[in-house]
Image 1 (tube, rainbow, N blue to C red):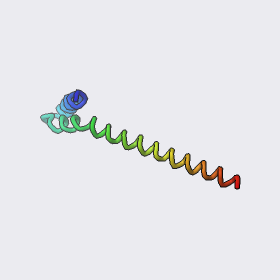
Image 2 (cartoon, rainbow, N blue to C red; image 1 turned 120 degrees about the vertical axis):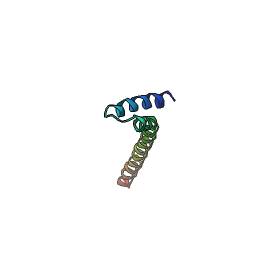
Image 3 (cartoon, helix red, strand yellow; image 1 turned 30 degrees about the vertical axis):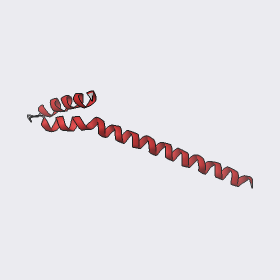
Length: 67
């Protein structure tokens, strides 16, 4: 929860630099930690899945070569 608040404050300050009210930056800053967290989780899951598939393919190719 604290990350959303910090993100909202930082986003608001960055959006105010060009003369805007800062509301849009606060909204974007609020949701950024949640979006990044989801993207990181999906990326890690994809990397683990890719590693498992490659490991299985490697094991099957080694066992096929022995026969």
